Image (tube, rainbow over all chains, first blue to last red; front, side, top):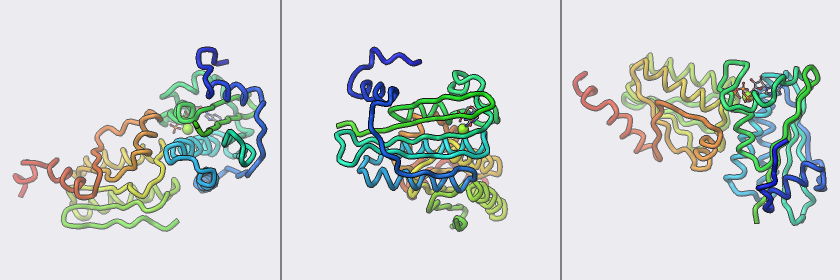
Length: 159
Length: 125
Ligand SMILES: Nc1ncnc2c1ncn2[C@@H]1O[C@H](COP(=O)(O)OP(=O)(O)OP(=O)(O)O)[C@@H](O)[C@H]1O
Ligand SMILES: [Mg+2]
């Protein structure tokens, strides 16, 4: 677990609330992910929602880049899976978008290793997971070997 | 999606990437660019990314590889018009595009790749 104690500003509190499931979210859309075209589709769907929610271009670019990395990981490493997007209630004091990426692929043996920049089992750059973690305000990953992987990212507006 | 247009003007190959290519079209684009350089003996390659809203690690690697191969074939590459949000995101992501020059506009890009050839360029004439 990553300690958040030193980092208990507003963002730190929101992270803690997300971790404990204390933020009320509604499910907006789901995209099956198994082909390289699905990566583009997933990006477009998240983009449209973030435009609708009036996120700034930089936040949108960061999050959509992470969506691209995480859906590509599903296609490349797990074969198929799904992206589900949630949103805080419209008009909420906290405009927030959350994307969950799940697959029933092989899972990740060592998450700490997989999160290290440059680590890749597929002779690639190994920047997808470490990058997504840096690009989004909230990042969570869990994986069970032989069962699959679940990654969650979230972004909210800083008022 | 439809294939990306590749233009040749003088000794320069210009590629405006209009939309978001998927992985297959991006790979196809790389092949066609290199073919065009080979066929025309172009000394410069300009890839216009100003319409791209995101560049992820896959695309940045593909662009860097294209530039590296173009150099082996004798053409210098400039990446022009990258949105500042895209550039910032690439830095966050930890991507390094070694050997790829960047310029803000097409004109700057043209100047960059022709200057890059420098005296070397003249002596070859
Ligand atoms: N959904 C997944 N299922 C199984 N393994 C995964 C999954 N996502 C990531 N991994 C493992 O974690 C490693 C690191 O992932 P990361 O996205 O950082 O790098 P990469 O996909 O190998 O390369 P890049 O994304 O830079 O092209 C992968 O090489 C793979 O072993
Ligand atoms: Mg990856």
